[in-house]
Length: 205
Image: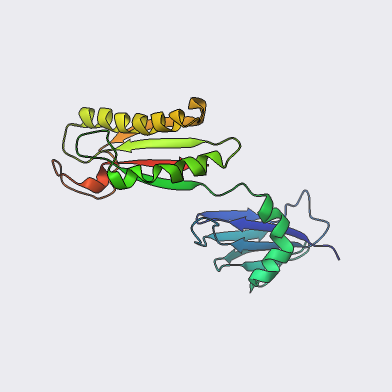
C-alpha cells in the first residue's frame, strides 16, 4: 500500500492535522518530526484527526495516520531512513539562514578589527545565494539617550549596508534598521558601557 510522507522541522511548537473529514487521504500518511536544520533543536508537533491526537517531541519521531483510526504509536527513524524517505524533499529546501554579529567601537560606526575581518565571510554567504535577502539591524549600549542611540544604531547598520553595496550587492536586497538600546544582547543598567551591545546583527537568507 502506498504511503504519503510528511515532514516537519523546526524549534517552534507546531500543530499538524493529518486528515480532515471532508477529504480523507487515500493512503496512510507517515509523519516525521526532524530537528531544525540550522540549530539542531527539535520542537514538537501535534498530529490529530477525528479519531484522536498524538504529540511528537522526539528527534525523528514518526507516526502513521490512517483514514479510519487515530495516529499510530510514535517510533523513531534512523538518520539513514530519514535520508531514504525524505532526502529529495530535504535537498529541495532553501539553505538555512546565516547569522552574523559585527561589533563596533564606542560611540562610533567603526567596526572593531576582529569584526572587520569577518566581512569576507559575510560577503561570501550573500554571494552564494541567487536572490539574497539581507537584514541588517544596528544596536547600541545604554550610554546615551534613546533618540541618539536609535540614530547611532542606524549609522552602524548603514555602515554595514554600504560595505555590502560597495562589494556589488544590490541595495534592493538589503533591509537596514535600528533598535538602538532597545534590544540589548547583554542586559545592563542605563548609562553602562558594554562592548557586546555595540553591534550589528546580520541575517542572510
